[in-house]
Image (cartoon, rainbow, N blue to C red):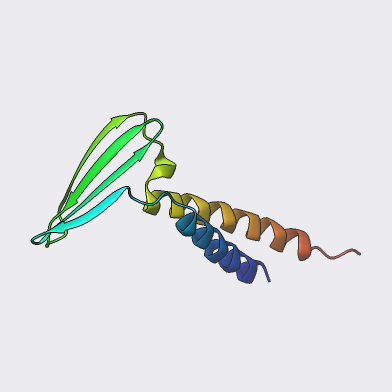
Length: 96
């Protein structure tokens, strides 16, 4: 029961983090390079990714770790997993 709720919490938390992440303001491909520009109230970020997976990130202002989609998804997944594990322990208690 605990493991099941942990996995469900991880999946739900990750999905919430992924789908609520800010979308890039600009996303374009130039040859084999993908360029993505994000902007929010605190600053902006430019990410260029090459065809072999190498990337370059340039940021300005106070960028939140929640602005990056992958980091946000990981944070929300861990939070959901913790909530699921707590619910598993609370639900698994047996009254004697």
